[in-house]
Image 1 (cartoon, helix red, strand yellow):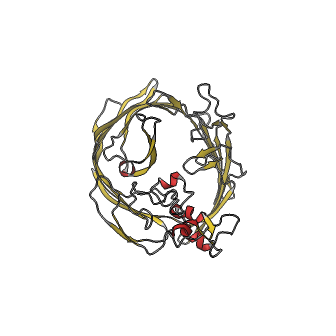
Image 2 (spheres, helix red, strand yellow; image 1 turned 180 degrees about the vertical axis):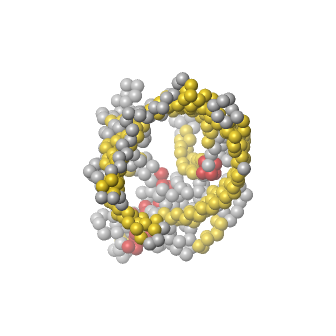
Image 3 (cartoon, helix red, strand yellow; image 1 turned 90 degrees about the vertical axis):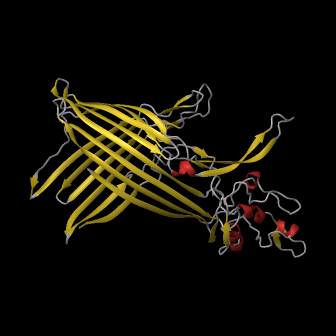
Length: 492
């Protein structure tokens, strides 16, 4: 029997440096000439005297914007003392105090406690093919997370009902403010970061069984059963079972077959339980003439009582290792040194990766290499050579061609003329030399990635979130090109 306990804590501070102040940028851009002085001033200051510190911003031409104007529309005024009541619906109100800096920041603290005990060993002689092995155990885990936001101006409480960007107001001289900015609760572009408080615990018990069934029989040189079950109770979500059963059959010395069925579960993490975001939308009143629309604030986010996800997984596989084509491992004595050659090939074929919507529409994204990273075929081949202290490796990586999007050009609707993404082949190398150093060894190595500087295939897309296009699937293809890494590794 063995067990362990561990405690982990993660502290993270992230800053949005040089963020654009949405509550100021539109005021600074609306610059006019003061008829009394002839100077360029902000229209809002001229009309109403509001925002007397507003600095006009000139964007026409490189270097035309003054340093003072850039400083006024980016970042916070440092040294502002803040005491705010964070927006945390469903929790008792509390206060958070700090002195703000120039940037919007979030401070995260995560804690985890884990304790587990496991007993394993042979429990029976089995059925004649070998002993029966079993493992049983239990685990307790607790996780907690706190996220504080330091936004000293604009909307310090991160309340989605607070709108820090002033809407157009002729009486005040405010104009040119987009409705989307005025109906948003953030003062910085792309900065919807909420306050978070949350914690949950997990209790688990599990058992696993390894049972040899047959040995040295026709078509079953080694046939074994593996079965496992796990009970878990998630705080706020309730209890759930997961289990699996599988057979592994060494049919011959060259061929091995295996199959597994499993009921898999995944519980929500801290973010999925307690994270929150918000925004605006329009509510259409279809009971009134003309179907008028009213802007409303929406709050959406995690659910502390969300149920775990469940999935049934079937896996069937085969491994073929021909005895007539083994990996080449050659040793030749020459001037006291030895040479070794080796090769390996890995191939992956994706048959299906599909989802079915609530409306019953099935979408198979296998082979989608534009919006997703799901090529049908992926190949990796290695050749390695070593002689004495010198070693070298050449690796080839192949990514199959695919579709830009599996949802394009469906049901007779022609969305795009060319819905394909080309294939890509990359070659990488590594050379190294080992030499002794007291009291250990050192290795000098050189890695070259994408030796032939292959450009990635075009996979054009557009992000509504970032309002920007992308020409490459960065999660799948190399967008940097040829690059070198020279290093030294010491082993003591």
